[in-house]
Length: 156
View 1 (cartoon, helix red, strand yellow):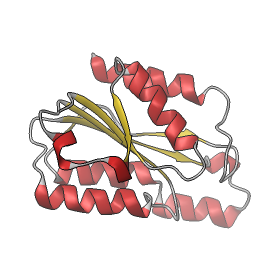
View 2 (cartoon, rainbow, N blue to C red):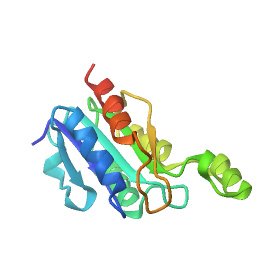
View 3 (cartoon, rainbow, N blue to C red):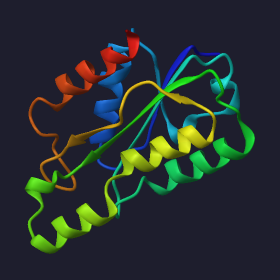
View 4 (cartoon, helix red, strand yellow):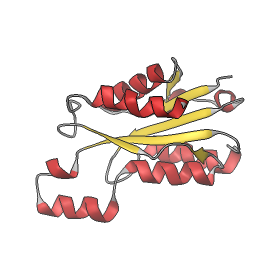
């Protein structure tokens, strides 16, 4: 049983680093990879943060699957929540075509946020994206600090 939980998925370690920074900012909240989460982790939860790398303009397959199950089997009524992703910023996109696709389809954070709402959670902080320099990283300088600053707003 955990009061505060950060759930993430990560392919190259960037989203994991952001999740760990958020966990520290949330007074050392539990931080778990989505594949390690079980239903008991969601009992007595007061705050839930979920993050994913943006892959093809969506959350990772494991995060999407987890969110689908969460909507079906668990009521997050009374749970404060927030969503984040890691992404290549639209300014760093190397082609006009990619920038157009980003404008059209967006990033994973908003999709995660919508799923949390469907599961009954109350969004306590607007979702956020943290930038990587290239698809495999590394994180853009300052993003870990920015993630902690963002997460600290959840405590107020």
